[in-house]
Image 1 (cartoon, rainbow, N blue to C red):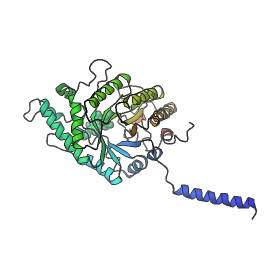
Image 2: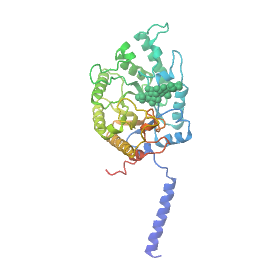
Image 3: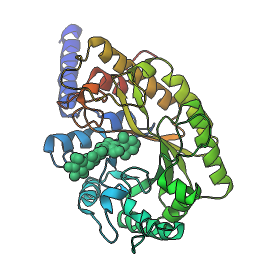
Image 4: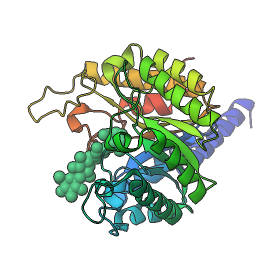
Length: 362
Ligand code: G3I
């Protein structure tokens, strides 16, 4: 057999072999692409973990799960002596069944809270001591119930003010009654309940310079007092204008600063909305303007910018969680076009920009 034919046969055999291997090799998901960088998480609702198409997508793409609402204080503990574990248990059992680690969200927040705690059993306003007793019981009960599957907790959520001036703490009911001491207490109780869980303070706009500095100062003070806090959760709710302009620089600076006081930083609620309003979430109505190709390109660029910064800080960033599975679930509304999967669960160009970063030119 002459050499030309021999080479052709070898090439054909290699082609067949490659195609066979590729035919059997499943397409990699986000979690596979980011092996060696950080875990990729998703916030789920009950539909996501019961619909076969959605559970298949979750299992392909993610290796961390957060319950969007079902583990929040007001949802799981709606009244004194009244517990509603059913939905949270379904999320926890999904994680146990599929061996996916679960982020606990959350133990104390001004919204969706156990507001009944502020009224004592006799109907009078509760004292700080009475609230502390109820909140400690809440934290011990919830943390102990899920300690086999929960690897970290958002212990306190959004306790800082949005104002660049004045009191750095949010003037919440808890703050009014207890001062900011409640933050320390929640971390102490959570650590007592599960010493192995990583404990996070979680907030939005955590890259904005004034809020960043307030969070840094609070966490440093907690560390100096020996309060068991392990990390800072940066929620990561952005928009396409900020995302294509100065988001990357601010996120980069914030991670660098936070990494001086904590060893763990997690992006806990990532989405990038199409509207330009900060704060007010523009829930696109049916007659809202269509999502243009320009918006789609801005979304892709914003996610590319964000994940480039996150990869740079892979030594301290250990989980990046998307807030909701697809645009259909998003708290921002489908017309804000905020996630990597559209309302039909189809990957956008932004998905490939995030997943296939190794193929992109350096
Ligand atoms: O459970 C009730 C249901 O019984 C009722 O029929 C229905 C209609 O009123 O409301 C349901 O409660 C809703 C809840 O989500 C569960 O679906 C609340 O109205 C609704 O306000 C709540 O919104 C959640 C929001 O937190 C509450 O502030 C969003 O789904 C959730 O994505 C969002 O998530 C927060 C994070 O926990 C913390 N960071 C900010 C982020 C966005 O706000």
